[in-house]
Image (cartoon, rainbow, N blue to C red; front, top):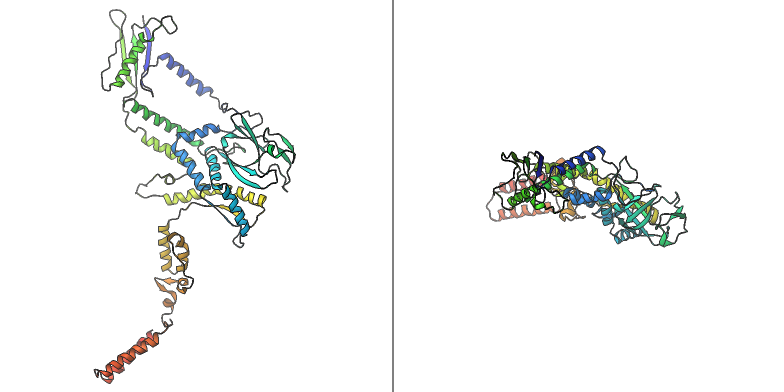
Length: 526
């Protein structure tokens, strides 16, 4: 009897296997269904969003992306580290004022007590990878007690309440509620209400015991017009590049697992005999099916590369009208396939974060062998890092004013050093020879870098020099005062020479007169 074609795909990630046409048909239907009726809603993530705002993107899935792409994880790390993790200082609010030493000492001790740079690093890491970040404010006791510490809260565990005031944290079956800093106070700092940390309920101000009082949160996000509560992580436009790179990786991995052999399909058509029982029948034995026999022969091939393939198909009747086709699915599979595709995916991920490849230790050279790392670092610093630092500094200075009452000083994060000292030295040398900069200014600029020491008593360090000559000598060469003792030295030298000549009778009176005249001229020039 005439049979419908049975197709067998014999290559997959785990080795060799066989897939029948009915299975392929089911996959085709699922693909059509997903493309035409795919849901745009976030799938169930274990949260009840009746009174909560739902994030634009599933935070847990966004954290998974960090484990799937090297460059995405490295970008999040380097941006968070270079924006908030390099150090801090307490400086005066204005250059005209000085910082109170007691204020500076109190703030420095406070921020160092909980390693503020580690806290800010983690919040920026969350913000870069998920779109928003949070810091918990810890107090001694009630609402008006002093702040003792700040701590990072993993952002994927937080959801915003629709009232814009409360924040819910959920980890497994445990739930804790928080309050956005400043939202439960009036302009004068008076507490308007309390929030129960266990259930999120509001209570009259100063009525809850300290153990049930919700802590406050400092919240930051990357702006998106789609949500005022959750930001959009930078990687969202590059998610396709991440999954494209995963497919490239899996494809190459499968290539090596299969000993470099191309994927192919086997089709058997015509009048052939197969096992007369189907799955579910009594006494069904899969090993007697044609599908199983072919798959076993092909699996033997993978164990013994370059061996011959023999496929025996029993036919019906004497004519044996059976056709077997082996169709390669990919012929020119080469080592390191999609190398350029990988670089394109990498560049797209870096572009979404706006991080130069140089910051990740990737050496990129131009077509002429040069590098634009200097310009790229400047753009990266001003357009990526500085806005993030401004946000963090604003929150810390908000606390300094509201909680400590200090108005003479402010918190400042340390910036990355993108100075090109070799270029600066060349510029300083040219400016020095053009009488545009003083030696003391050069020492002040390069002193810390090269260990230069200033000499306050040296007046020559405050002079301008033109091509190595002091300006006074350039403009008034005859008005320069003689160094101390010049006349006495010359007089003594003149007298010694004349005395020597007269004593030896080696010279006439005219010669002595000539020597005196020469010394007069020399004195006049000096």
